[in-house]
Length: 162
Image 1 (cartoon, rainbow, N blue to C red):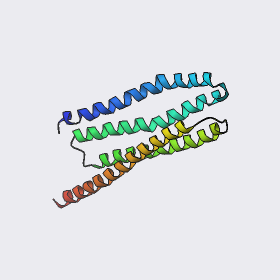
Image 2 (image 1 turned 135 degrees about the vertical axis):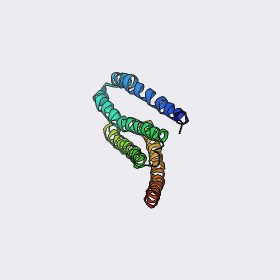
Image 3 (image 1 turned 30 degrees about the vertical axis):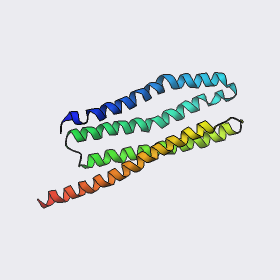
Image 4 (image 1 turned 120 degrees about the vertical axis):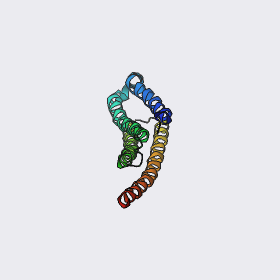
């Protein structure tokens, strides 16, 4: 298969990843510092927020890397292989991990901030949207992985017969 057939998808993965990386490096620390200055009573949450965000974004970048690997397998005509199934498996677990970490973040944020009398509805609604999006991705990848595994099994049976 021509490499140009997946070039658009590879570019899309980079277009998704580079801004998120830039936001994590430049905008997020600035935002945390600005919020700590504006709300000195919750300034102690600046570093736990940054650490939690960086831990949550790590599976995101792992999933993007696995997506690039999957696209390279497609380029190499290895799409119907265990390597592709394994890449989809990693993407699925990354999406589930992201959802789990966001749930933990929402619960801990609720515990830490709700006692302060702060309004956290935006915090919770953003978290719920991210949880929904990553769970949709996890379910879609699970269905795709099962289908691909069946194709790989049929292909291996046919290789044994011939």
